[in-house]
Image (cartoon, rainbow, N blue to C red):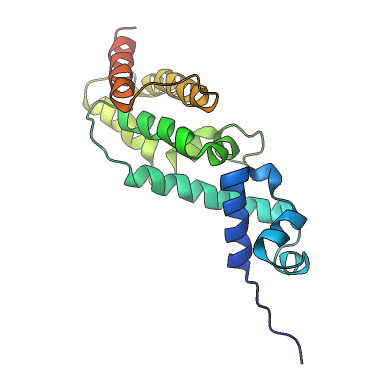
Length: 183
């Protein structure tokens, strides 16, 4: 009679996600993951063809995590792109390893940065529509200008070069939006 599998696919993916979140995705190898999950490498390769397949599911889990993070983020500001920018910058500060995996990695498993940021619920599309509603003449162009500023700020936070408080960040994002409208 075959022995019952005690380590499930969810157990393996959960352990891989926690490792990627705390230590970085580069630390998720078959051996380190097996040690974290409390098993040998055999259960990993029983449920995944290879580590690439696991990596794809891990990346999808991280995308969902960011999407939930953004959806739960307080939407306190009416100025377009400010809430999205603030959430993105804070995500970089709070979830540095996941931010690196999602937004700074060369391997995005066939997804663009826009796709990752827009997510399942159309976060970017909503912001572009909001900018249009508030009279922005080129909302897609405005997104690109704001995105460069937002992404740069988030990246600066990874190297401790961004030390603004939330209220300062909001003020700066609002000022950028107004300034970009006049370009």
